[in-house]
Image 1 (cartoon, helix red, strand yellow):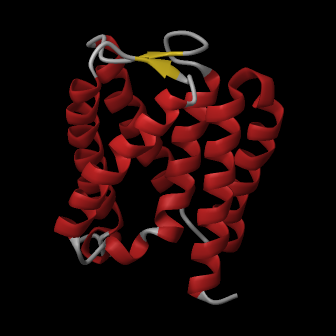
Image 2 (tube, one colour):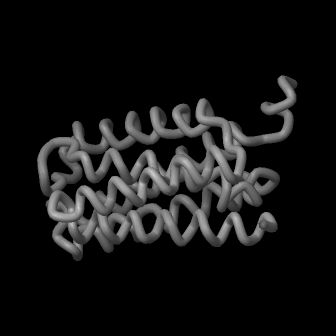
Length: 166
């Protein structure tokens, strides 16, 4: 497969996972689990992504999410930190090094893309009743910051200098 084909497969798998996890939550947890497993193993086995990179991205994502939850900005359906949300973070962490690696030499674009697309994903999830919020502007501002930081960390983590130990 070509690099573009890997990107498409990974992107489609993650978006199927997102839809299953957000719209179905606990009702579709098995389907979400299967999609997550496919995403994770595709990234590692086929696209040759390091599992340690995936786990580092996952840990940072969970930390950033936990901060927003702890601040009371958002309440997710299914509890404080529902399994479907954890699955989404692992899915994103598996997808990003494959589908979004082209952003590595473009850190400003990566941060801006994260600051715009991240909050949009949460707004869509809120519209699907996956979470409740008191203030949509605060949610958008918080997740713009979270996803800007996440994408900055992502770019730093996959930069060629980082991989070469420089």
